[in-house]
Amino acid sequence: MIYDGSPSRTLPALAATIRQSLGANVRCMYLNSPTMVAGFRSQLYAMGTDVEHELARGALVLVADSAHLVDGRFDVNQMIDMLEAAVQTALADGYAGLLATGDMTWEFGSEKELAKLLEYEWCLEQLFQRQAALSGICQYHRDLLPHEAVREGLASHASLYINDTISRLNPHYAPARSPDERRAAASPGLDDALPVLLAVP
Image (cartoon, rainbow, N blue to C red; front, side):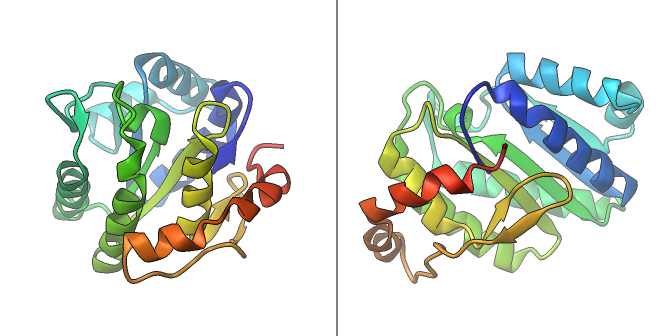
């Protein structure tokens, strides 16, 4: 999901998606800053979700800490291992799968080591192939991320999340055998595609 403007604009669509997944017996994990997690919780309440019940039974997981960072720095392997363990635990607990969504600006911590972005997205793609029960929505805030990071994100995803009812194939997706191969495909020309691909109208 590529968006601009206030991050709060993403909450209604994401909350609707989470509600649908909860109804399908999918464990849902939302990772973001404490402020955004509080806003997401409020949005779920406003839509009629019994948030405390969903949290208590383990169907909903809200993550606002930085436990995925290693000494305050983003570690690709740590994050991939955390997600793989989370989907395996969800299945062991009787859920049909795991849906995880997080904002890339927050996930990479204060160091903003975005040079690791392509490696992370490539490893994440391999994880999705290994774990069919895992699904996710990567959130890219165009106002806060460098142009090259958004381009690389666009080239790394086979589909674009529009809202809770619409997603579409990404014509700019570049299958790759390595992060370097994908970096070569994430050309500056993709900047022209972004205005018409923003996920939140």
